[in-house]
Length: 303
Image: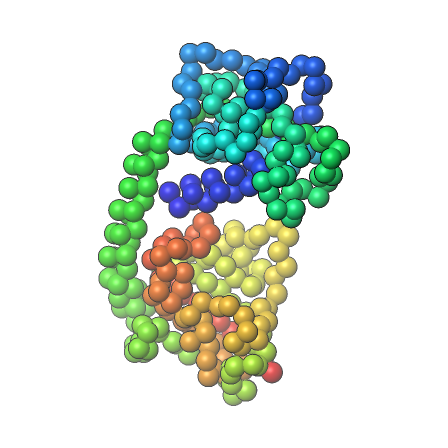
């Protein structure tokens, strides 16, 4: 459900923004929404308020493609109250499962409800530009099904919360970690002790690091070789040591605590409960709520 909520929010932003077609091929509703259907499946289910639509979506401003998941159908819109007459929500409620349709909406009408930086850079106010939404509706997740998903998610997260301490204790035992945790529950293992300057507030620190879950899954690393071995290379990312000023960059609590007082040249492992990491919210696709984390850190320089 967490991923679901994230996706709904993300696509809502896209929705504020589908081939520009000859306008004479469009019909128009009483509220001014331009539409045309390429496929109509009158036997298909129609969405109701609160339902989530699954399918393919292409968003365009005139002929410029802003978003497309064609070939990769996913959850794209949640049916909600219209923001203005003739908006995309009216179009969504006209569709059936199996329908394929295009809706055209004046860009100026949408811009009234967004901040200037939320509009695409090619938008020009007052020039009659149009947003197009090309939608192939494949499935409908009802609001009742969504409510059950949320209930299941909450139950799963409560179980994760209840099981976290036992999982962390099992990991500590299996890894033969003998150091005592700090008052906050952080385990700091010094694998190699450096003799350079100490990590202190205001100093600039450069490190290589790899973050893992307790099962060994790598969720982040500064080293390309590690990312390649784990099949976690992020396209376009520059893999290099992370450099930051102590106390001036927002880092997770376990990292800040574990790095404090360490010396240049040291190699350390931090094992932290979720409250020192990303807690109940989790992070990204890999770090679920209530996930303990393990960081291997090499301190390259402290200046």
